[in-house]
Length: 118
Image 1 (cartoon, rainbow, N blue to C red):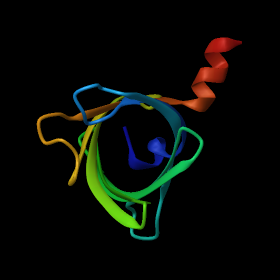
Image 2: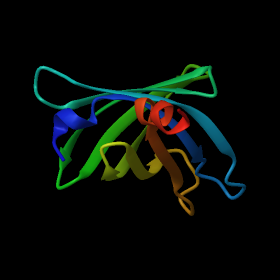
Image 3: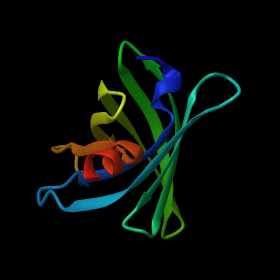
Image 4: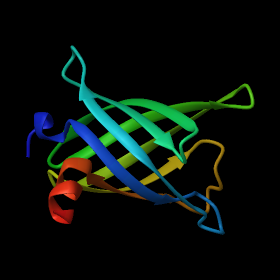
């Protein structure tokens, strides 16, 4: 798989970094910047935006992310295993999350979902 094959929009489902494993849904948009690095933008539950940048090697995508909530900036990292160009399987952790747990996230390329439904 190549870096260029990762660009696009993905539907995501995930669980938070907590004992309850609260779930969420959203959209992840991946693009490539001028330095040939991944730029990411998440929209979680239609109201929370996260931004990140990262790198790709050996079908592993690593993204450092951040978001603002209650005038505080939160930071973390997500690691995705690229199962195929249409499916990313990841886990994540943020600095102020519960260190006993990892969040999890599964991403499905939106174009491929439309094809499967037709």
